[in-house]
Length: 127
Image (cartoon, rainbow, N blue to C red; front, side, top):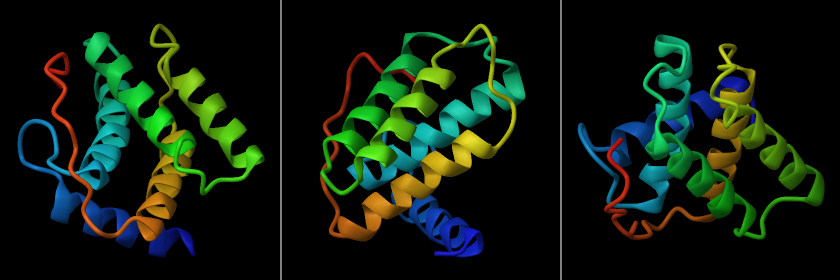
């Protein structure tokens, strides 16, 4: 897929699966929401409001993508490296590269999982 196609598919996911407030009802929505919550916190706030909720989102993203069995070992290593970098909250990642790469992996995951999968509400997540 081209970068534009990834962007359009991510936009479709956002509008179709992410609620205005709170956690998504589907895994599809929660994955794309997680990337954008992490991007927003770093780029808009310099991670000034970083809390345990952001760690939950990062870990959810990493675990769900890694456990999907659709990515190569190299792609999994890249996902792990990207999440590890984002978790260094005291040094916010302000460029788009990592967020765009993670969004592409979420879209790849979505292309293999287009039927909505219920997301289990996490009572410890307030982001």
